[in-house]
Image (cartoon, rainbow, N blue to C red; front, top):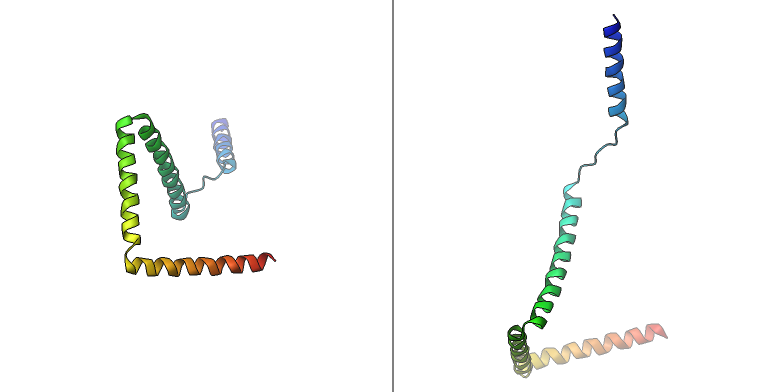
Length: 108
């Protein structure tokens, strides 16, 4: 009889302990997705910083990087001188000018 009483109390104690244990929250797919997106952004930032460091430390890579930048500038200049692109650039400048005027009017 004592064995049943002791085993019953033991079972009751275990039930009480598990009832008080904090409930483990399962991550919803949205929370997991947001977490992964943040990790991806952080990783991209870290990779970009490391690329800059590597290029700065290696003279050959630095030379290649400077050549790429020079070619990119030349390409941009040549593309921007084309008539179709000039029209779009002028439109963009007009829109930016109007937006700046509106911002200045709001500040007054």
